[in-house]
Length: 346
Figure 1 (cartoon, rainbow, N blue to C red):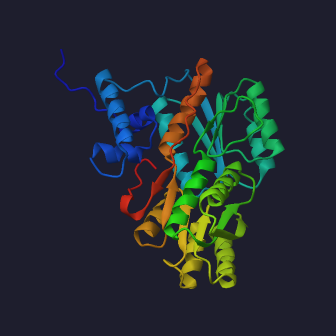
Figure 2: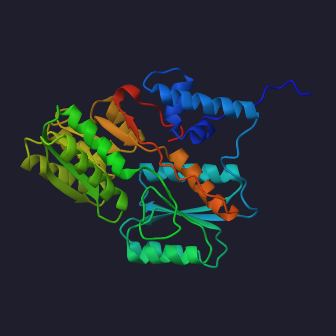
Figure 3: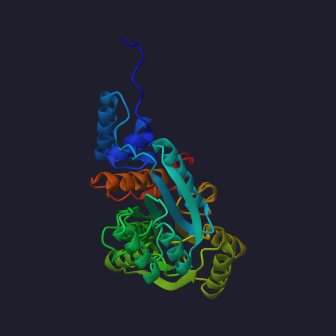
């Protein structure tokens, strides 16, 4: 009989079993405050279950031999998508799956559709995609599913495609969370603006709808004075934010649903508005982490990229095995300066 102790459960496995983010598990295991009692118990129960098994759970089921996956994320790659790409590569290594990852220009739906169709008949055993909301992309995904190639949507939904699992945030709920935290930080009244990418990702529209719904229901004295469409680049965000601040010296809050935060920060700094204008954004990155610490950003709504990657690969494998994938929404984490974490597992 071996005297060696059974392996300790991994944070990522506990997070998957408990249905929470890895940051929440880390806080619970290290006894840090800020986690609800019910969530603490859920994490501890998952820890006990995994420890009792003496081995890793089958949360990531064994992949069929020789399984080859393709992943298509929006490009050019930014910090959030780069993080998801790294996590997908790590999960593929852990499961013995071959993975080819491509970053496709966000606004080029035709290129995304063409890349998806390349997976027909070339031996690709599954596709993970951040889909543009466009008929060409919808048709290409439909062809793959009809041909028996499992497809999983990540980060953004694509309604109207039967048999397409989605792994990511409840983006409407995340938009409501952004609206709630911003409104409370402003004292429940004031003028705000929000930035979103070109209306090619459903996720940004859902975040916008969530923001507007909670303001309408709970914060009628918060007024959205402008909405600005960007192409996710810091340069475009800087230009738009600079002009916005010049037009609206009474602006008190900004929400950015998309990328390009550096440009908005620069415009706020140039206008002398850092700290005065409450800035809320999405996805913790190396830069947004520093911005939170230094007070240039008020809050970040984050989605755990490691959990998304693990569930996306598991969802492809589950479809090969004829079992239902885990489609629980990834929890939306509210990250402020006082509960900030480092970027391990992001």
